[in-house]
Length: 393
Ligand code: HEC
Image 1 (cartoon, rainbow, N blue to C red):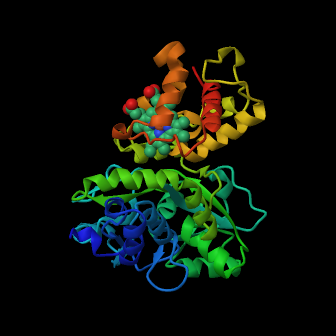
Image 2 (cartoon, protein in one colour):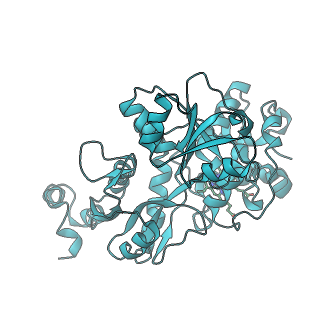
């Protein structure tokens, strides 16, 4: 008997033998998915308790999609890179790691990025942040040696105050010792939600070292697994959003603090892994301002298009930005040539909509573009193409 018949779905097997016959069952009953994760890293993962964290709940959902159960190998990740190196031998997938190209793990490849994370400003509800300057002259609590500490100390006019732990910083905030704090967004959001009744306003920020993306590392010994997990992560995007909400992750669009490296830029590099980190120069997003006023060009309707209202285009745009922007940039304006969706018309002339439709529906899996047919409805795909027509150069 093949190994896959033994565990983990013995009881299901019985029924299935009767109902569907053995062949189909051998497809559904795979070996368990062995997932490595940190046993004590909330809100990401935890080995005990009822709320297991975003990674673990996600791993369970991925397992389900793959038709297999999940087994955990718990590994403290104080020294993450080393932990992963040692660990990848004993697991199929590691939930989860920085998606940056320079963050390589021996014995593993990475899926595409599925989660944005970063630092966040914690302050009173009345505080509004538009730019770094808004922190000038304010007492700002930072973790000693953290990127926000480095950033504030390297510029003049700022008053970072150092603390050792997030707990100390929250206490300093409550005592009025500091007016604001810059903390790791997910853990500050989680703490604020679970123990402080959302007393503080949390505003995510972006910039060099301040934000990035997360991917799953997949063992090289299981080459077929990477694409399957990729597809599952794509399909599970709405669920991932819900988990972020459940665990208090800040979800607003981050405010750019460090103009040396834009959010747009960072997110494309890390998702794609193609561009070397920190190379290209950044323009802080003139496209965005332009786009908010952009109207659909109805003279440009191809065979795949139907006329849609401006409000539908707005919806399509936010759909695009929630599903596609981590690879294609906010509003499709990726600095990476082959991902810049503003150039479809230049590239394919009057065939561009057809190419876009085929590419979105069927994907280019070997090149890193997921398949969306089945995940996004035909109508919504057409609306996204309508939105894309508003950004063509
Ligand atoms: C995981 C990353 C990723 C996500 C998410 C993603 N794409 Fe892509 N997409 C790519 C890559 C990489 C390419 C370029 C493939 C190549 O080199 O041919 C691409 C190519 C495309 C192209 C063709 C570009 C061209 O010039 O040939 C279109 C259109 C497109 N994507 C639309 C979308 C839309 C719409 C979404 C969201 C529903 C989306 N993509 C989500 C990675 C992604």
